[in-house]
Image (cartoon, rainbow, N blue to C red; front, side, top):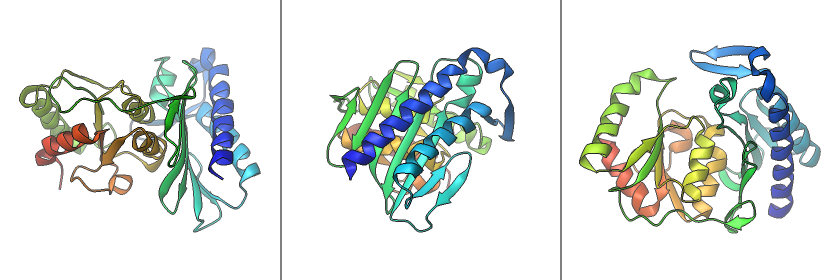
Length: 266
């Protein structure tokens, strides 16, 4: 089951990635709609999502589906649910900023069992299946081995959709840079790739406010299968519900969570 589902997810992600790249030279002419303040969807997002859903539904007609643009479809209360972000980093794509990805994950009763995050520009395909480890272009990956926050390279995302959390985020940032002496921070614009980069050790850790399930679904399994940990700002496992997430190897994730918790919103 896992092998077949992973192969189909890889196929769907690569097809979507090619569709995204085909439109890369006409981004200025794309139809774009603002879903809510500072949150956009383009015709490329929708076309990519349609391609993914078509491939997955052909192979798994009895599964449930949760996609960013079209919402829930397929079987209700299904044991298996596919969670799809067809273009994570739409803002980057529309500005020709070269950092975005396709994220596809399969969850069984809410737990991730298959995940693919694909960067079509770099042709980097991150993949994982439960209990079988995580890979980048078929080579095994592991989280970084840093033992604490000092000297760590972290990524984050500013709460652009939830600006009431700006002050809390800035307090967290100051605490990490000044009190805990992290090396530096990155803000890339693709949560799925941030988590993939934690999984392969390019980043030591990551935190962000207010993400959606499709932002987290793929990267969750990548980090876990690469030996890392995800938690919410209180150290629990409610990150898929709250959207507030911390990730890293076990020591970094725990240190990062403890450092930012005093500034976390109630």
